[in-house]
Length: 135
Image (cartoon, rainbow, N blue to C red; front, side, top):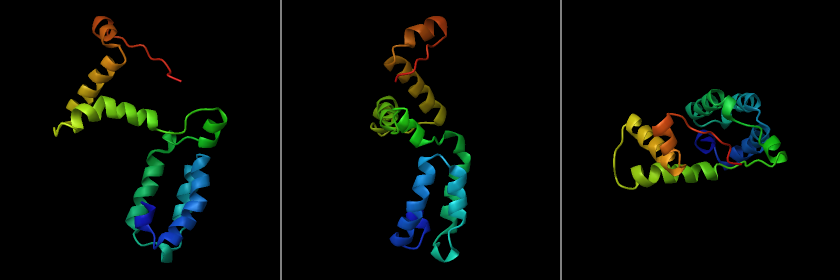
């Protein structure tokens, strides 16, 4: 989004050089302040920057401190989540050229996840699920 909002790659790269460490340490407030401080002469599309700021504000509680996660030996990638999405949702819903309502998609994903996690018997029998941390 920054590449579309700023005037050229040099400006974008300079902004990213300062923005990335803030996000590495989970400082969304710092990132928002930094974006708001970009010189008007460097901005091509203020609407794109406003959307990025809104994203950081809206998702503040979900953006971790990646430095701490690394120090603790935790995963900093979404690869596992992306693969599970591919197995649970994409395989059935996207690759067959189908169109789904939001509730239908969520319902099918839920049932598929129950089946993949071998929790469907417990759910249908006891209406309960076991939640376990994978790593």
